[in-house]
Length: 543
Image 1: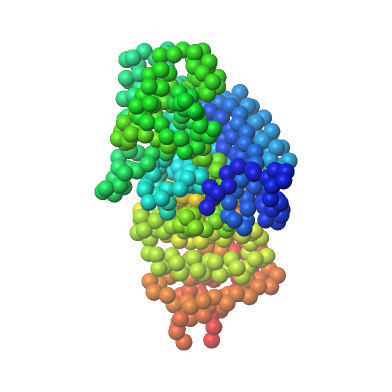
Image 2: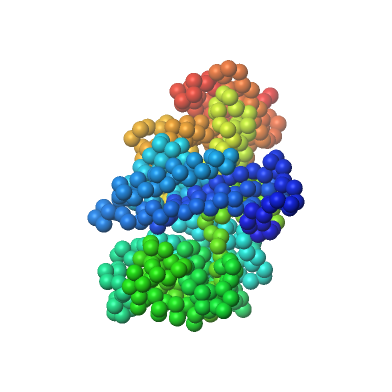
């Protein structure tokens, strides 16, 4: 159980510290709309738990974007850049083996967001994942699940950020609904709050706007709550924690930790009524609220209050864990360090791809055949057709499963339609850069090689990603060339490699089966293979 260890506990006279071989350190950075957070975690590889060794926060205010263009401002980017430099140096001082970094709504929506992330990669060597709204929601779910036992009851998870609000319906096995709405504390403060305290009429308008914005998300989770189920509402984020701290301050004995603390709807209403009548300076005098939180807490509180009313729940439970801890859990899943209640999430990549296969009516049996041939080629041609470190194998599988999805739109130039559908579809468990690579591998499995003017090529911002796409798409091109008939005729491939030569021997399903069509199809790829890789392709049929 991941929640068995949540804080560093080693001290003088305690149990001997675990061996360094048993502990792996990883850092997570969350680049949010209002603030940027760092978390350094020690992962116990035997117990499958992690402890938080250091947590840092800096108010970077990326959400204060240019009001006309919507772009990130130079001041905001400078604040974030310097914060990331400090966080990187701090993480390195802890000997972390990897820094996993995610950027959310402010960067996601800004026209110059990707340029900003490229400058971070070039200047600091930090590779930032630009996560989609649903992927952000999934990571929040993983983070909350790591610190809270769901039992037999479904849970509604509410994360109120600066630029977006995530609402998730989940149980201990999987997330049933992942939603992300473009309504957040910073966004509402910027767009709607001109006078503070907010006049009653303006407050009513703001509540109506919040309700209208959240209706699709609330409707979605309501449809997926089974008859007789009574979900538990869990609230995360700075807004919820600040409100929880204000509510707890009224207790005769305030709790030492807010994680797991329960706040009734009546109590929330009292806190909100108090906050909306105060000036920002008066809110700053409240001990649980810092200067920046005092400016944005009222819109955030109204989101929480309105959501509770719409969901019809009487209380919420606080969770200190959210996106940052979810990044740690996701890292552990990718490295095979988690089982038990996270086992279903370990297959999230496979399940989300299969969901898209079914959504676009792809012939799954044929797609699986192509994927099998593609992975056989990958395994047998290392050092000749590719120099991949292993990351490309999963991307190749996903692209192979989805390469024909564009036929759902039109058979003509379907590889271009496949790129569009994959690019704009939902691939949970994949980072933004991985998502783009899967789409591009499918795009270039036929017809022309990549060209600089192609949108699909321009979207790949690093040389390493372009190299991986070039190599994987070539393997997919060969695998797809074997899929010329509705029923399988090629049982397997025998692959022989020598320097600059790739020999493919086709093994037929039945003795004396004619494979001249498949041989011709592969041989027609020879010129492209030579042009792209310098490798000579030779094809023959067994027997």
